[in-house]
Length: 130
Image (cartoon, rainbow, N blue to C red; front, side, top):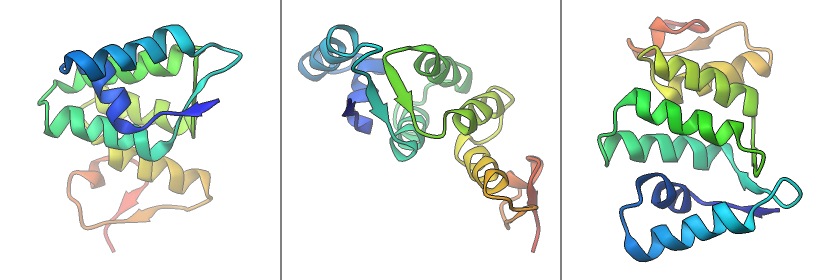
């Protein structure tokens, strides 16, 4: 198993750099297999979603579709896969992917809720004002 950094995922999804995108595609499509998968850390996943949203201005439903394809691929191992799936569903509903990850990880850790001042995060289950 090899780890994949945010920039490899972004190059693969956006195909915006002729050299790096080709290398990312070769790795993801030809080298990675179910027996020898690529590892995507939670940090790399959250960064990827953030970069696609903020830097590339890709629509949330398209980002969610990319995350869904990653989750469905047998050639990837995604850290905290269930929480990433929950955050992808939240993203499809117009919520912040990162906020949904925070709520899901808190719930997984046994938190009864997560305190926040973020008004948008408060629209998600699991958040409360202090």
